[in-house]
Length: 321
Ligand SMILES: NC(=O)CC(=O)C(=O)O
Image (cartoon, rainbow, N blue to C red; front, side, top):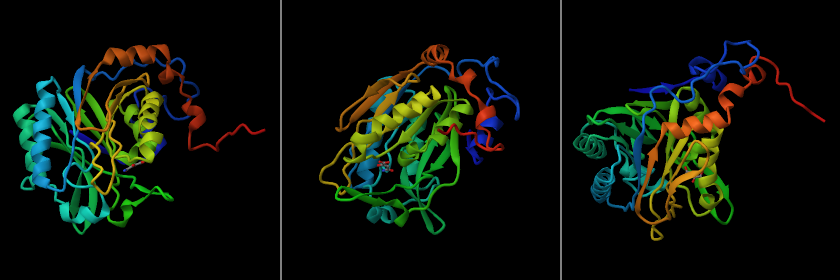
């Protein structure tokens, strides 16, 4: 089942973390924390770097073929990119939008393939219509084909690099208002979509809630991709000593938005476990609790945190010259 978490950063940390001392306690150093979340089991993940077109049916067929290939190669969990059933752009979202219900074409396709292949499927994202609004939304299915969670992109991609790229998702989309954590038989997975990766709070609250991994379907571009795509995934991994998987569309220079590609999995030590270039393909990684345990044993962030110092309930103490 998924858990949508709506809470303040510090409250989120305090409420759910097995590692946090009660409010007003002093130090963390003597706390005997287990090194990895108890429900974390090894699994293989496949990130499908899909070549999407303007034809939704073709995109769905192609996605299902690539998911099958990922499963033939041993993946128990498969991830699709942001906006995989539609071109990415404000001019497309309304025309391609679907409601999240069993009769919708993308829901049906993902439900059937997850059930047939008995996998966890993180269905990238699609433009979603709900009431009179549009969202950038991810659907997550379990191996029985049940929808076990949805995540609506919380932070919309509004940026302005003069002469390079100006994009305002908020011209057409509305933001989601809650965080998403999915419980699977391999462990808890936190979810963000693309621009969400720039906000470290999501991954930190996810990790404090026992997530072994954050998954980010994303579509960075030729300006922000080389600058930040890998760096952000590594940063979120290092901050929290968790796995991070970012799944992108393949680059299509005839489309109006040029995706960076480079789907990537980063380990809890911040090293890239698997990555690729901008072409269509699948990135595989074996996710290993032992790797997280050895990382956390070497650098013991979990016992060294000083929540007594970070508390929002007290005035911040800053060291100033
Ligand atoms: N497309 C996005 O949501 C985000 C992105 O490209 C960036 O943050 O850069």
